[in-house]
Amino acid sequence: MMNGSCACGAIRFSTSAAPFGASSCHCTQCRKMSGHSWASAQVPVSDLTIDGPVRWLELTPKARRGICPDCGAFLFWHGTGEDMISFALGAVDGTTGLRLERHIFTADKGDYYDIADGLPQRP
Image 1 (cartoon, rainbow, N blue to C red):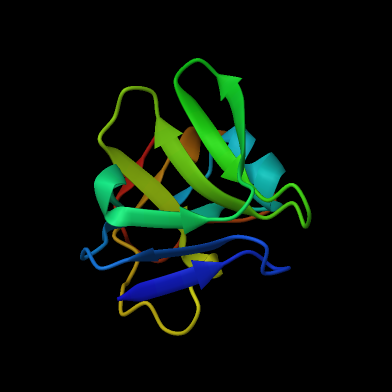
Image 2 (cartoon, rainbow, N blue to C red; image 1 turned 90 degrees about the horizontal axis):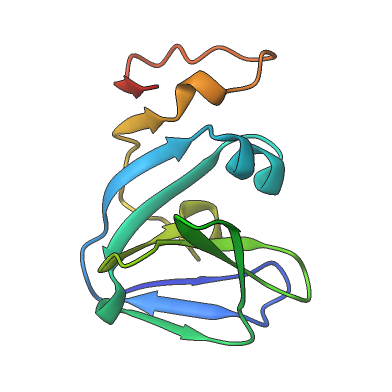
């Protein structure tokens, strides 16, 4: 079981599924919402339990992002019509047992840092 929460504790989430696809997203929206890049993993929507007042924000027609309306934590990313949902690895309570597998939307990354960890990069 993996559990997580927002900074203020108003939202809690859990999954018994094995998360996969750990990635760091460097797209403009993730950078603006997180302040840098956004690390996440994904599970089937049906295997993620969310308790609390998630506010779903649609910045593009392609996806919606779940945030806490109280503390502003960016917790979830759900592609339109997709059966999978991503959750913020930084919001997991305790260790994740995961390692990043790749960087995505690297063409949009900030100019103030380099990605030099040797992981695959998808522009």
